[in-house]
Image (cartoon, helix red, strand yellow):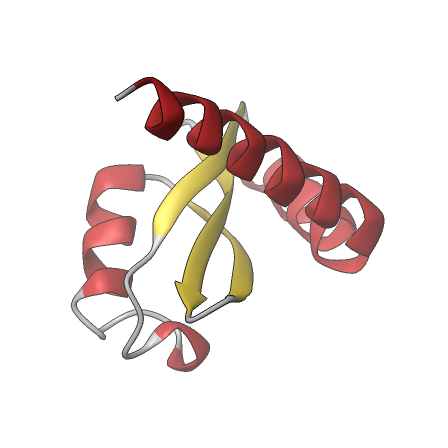
Length: 93
């Protein structure tokens, strides 16, 4: 079975919020988060997956999730990278 570690991003006004988790089904999990049936922190916000990585077992996925949750510098870099490319795409429209 494959496990995924993911990072979600949501914004309210000018402020961005991130959430890190793990799952076996990314589509189902993002659907739960966006329908306010996911983690309590994610309720009431619209989320986008900005990062995901596949792991061969649950143990490795949980370790990676823990490291990403605690590594605020990496989370900030992922946010900046996503927002940079999003702005590039939006400017071309």
